[in-house]
Amino acid sequence: MSELSLAYIFHNQQLLVNEKLELPKVETLASDLQFGSGDNVIARDLGADETIPEGWHLVSIRQLISSWSTEEFMRASRAVQLLEWRRNHKFCSHCGHETEIHPTEYAMVCPACQYRQYPRVQPCVITVITRGDNEILLAKNANNKSNMYGLIAGFVEVAETLEEAVQRETLEEVGLKLKNIRYLASQPWPFPSNLMLAFHAEYESGDIKLQEEEISDAQFFKFDQLPEIPFKGSIAHAMIMHVIQKQPI
Ligand SMILES: [Zn+2]
Image (tube, rainbow, N blue to C red; front, side, top):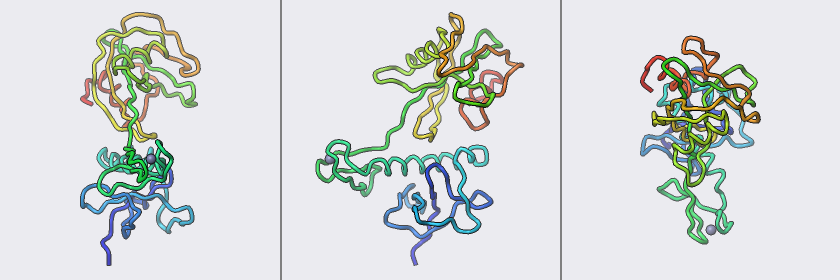
């Protein structure tokens, strides 16, 4: 009998777990994505014709952020991103031939032209902006129907430094100039494959001018009069707590 592996079984961004949010143990298949070295952990996609066994259900991995430890969530995050990458690289992007899974690396290899495709992360900057000792800029996303106010964030463009991306996104979204842009921390964010790079910056000049397709409102809030903010477990929450309560990130 083959050894059982702990399995991350996904249906898109939903993960199969039991009532206690534990992962199933399954017999390993050749097509499974192995991960971790020799610790019997695999990831696979739920087959289109497979039914979900009794006692198990699918939960969105977003939901697991608040229930699981950071370490557990990061492992699930790694599993979902690697599976998604493998699913999206079945063909060579150079010559179009069908690819093969590299036996030892996370790489999809083209047998015709040898081109290798590796998993990619999208760098994304997120900035907590303060003014003086007791004000923080928070902005409401135009596509978000809730009343939550978050931080200014956006993707890094080609040939841009991280600090330039912080300043550009802030100018575009709220029309403000920043000073003292400093790196704080990072967090992999599997929606779908981002690396969030957190910065703290201080307001330098300008009046708030909204980019209306992106932002429906933005204001400087006093530290003791905050609106609804992003949930615990997100890097935005940690950044806000860092500037307001001087908590480490
Ligand atoms: Zn090729």
